[in-house]
Length: 187
Image (tube, rainbow, N blue to C red; front, side, top):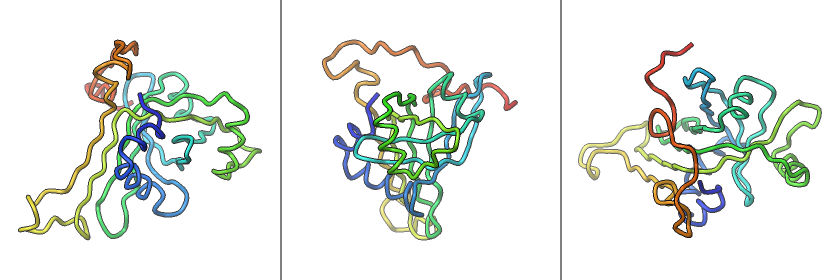
């Protein structure tokens, strides 16, 4: 999977559009979906931090943190703007950040309270999507195809191995496109 920085270098306009939606209210704001132990999805509001180093999230001791520690698959969706139904979506895998210097830098940038029991995760990007609609979420008749404008980026290494052409060594996915088992009922 690509880091946020690799994705942004490959598709800078798409990355900028996603960043704007995630940071439209100042600090990052979105909904994080994780995978529960039973394979079902769990959704939580979060404040992602986007820097030149990557896409990060401070996660307090909670079911979502245990989900990420056990199974790093995630999906992140922007909060809807007031004036439209535009949306940003990212999916991939989250990894705990172990480097204390990097944790300290990101904590300063994200203004993370030091007295809170949080852990920093970096989110790699397998899929990025940006959907644009007209004001109020309407796509007016006669404007283009009448459908929203959708941009999608898929990490080219996901299906075809890494950049050097080596086969992808990641574990096989289970369930739907982003690894969520949609056949299970919510618990």
